[in-house]
Image 1 (cartoon, rainbow, N blue to C red):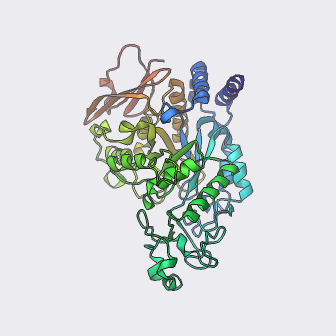
Image 2 (cartoon, rainbow, N blue to C red):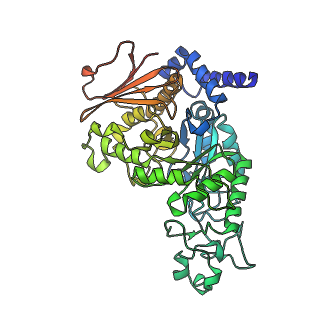
Image 3 (cartoon, helix red, strand yellow):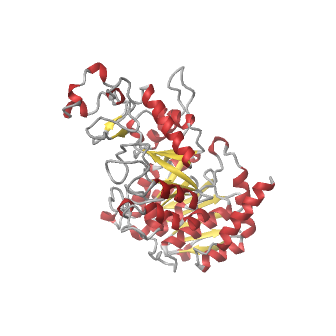
Length: 472
């Protein structure tokens, strides 16, 4: 207990004295409510997160789609910002760390080679150490792999089931068996089983039913854990059965894991989450139930705040969020405004950038485990927006996020905090979130003069169309 208290005090000291954040509003908030902030930090240190409830963490996606273009210095960039990142965030999601056919890391080649376009193995280790007490989350791309000299010749590791032949590691339904001159010559009985999920074009889809592949993935993930990673983000989780996600998550004994199951359907996401703890058979243990990114919530945010091509289509009534994962399974919801696919320079599914301040006011005051995009926090890449001014405030988006995280932790908001939505009118959203130390009321209203707030609450922070009240 004494060690926990000392660690909490040391983290509190960082929160109050961190020199990387000079914004007076953020520092004033920390100082004024230092006691409550310390209480939250101490509680979080002692929690064991039974059934994932009452988790108070906030995650940072520690890269954008452009980060790999920084001439192999991205790990150094993260390390340079490590003190501030560790002050505000509990987890940092790293991009794929292995050697890859594509510079962004999403076409992994030699898994055990940790020198990549983001930097050297040594600089990666330095970055993981620099973000402490935040923990590193590895982006594990295990749906597919690239060959080293041809389509399917895996190296480091080979995952061979027969000497000189590793094609049983590849799903028989992979397009390589129809399009690649070498793979087309492989006999049917030397190919893997049919894929257990969606096909991924561009790399070889792995046969997760193959025990050699399974053990190979587990061994590699354990190596990453020993290297310093404390959790996982499972890339392209549609590509293989969710049972394997739970199996790997259980086998590697992680304390945080989230799957990228990208569908705009709450029911399907819930089904995926539940299936991660379904046993693969008598020889396997029951899988560890795994969190998922709330793509349903992301869809609703897009409708509320308008996509870039339809910026004026805003209807706050959609903020009821009755079928989001945050609402129906908050203990398994990782919420987000944007990621490297939906936003950044890819912009596959973006919201109107002018509404980012409001979107984060919602995200960081509500249940779920929020994930902040580095695109919105930093300025080091071509797509960085951290120095943008949030409309209706004097805050940069970077400091706006820091302020909201601090307020969230002061109030003790967790992933399963009670959410009471009072108004979901077309032009007004009003909700109360009950924290362990204090409550927050968020009102999104273009006409804030009409806001009605209960006795005992006061406005603590506001922008052009939103106001946050607390009973601190």
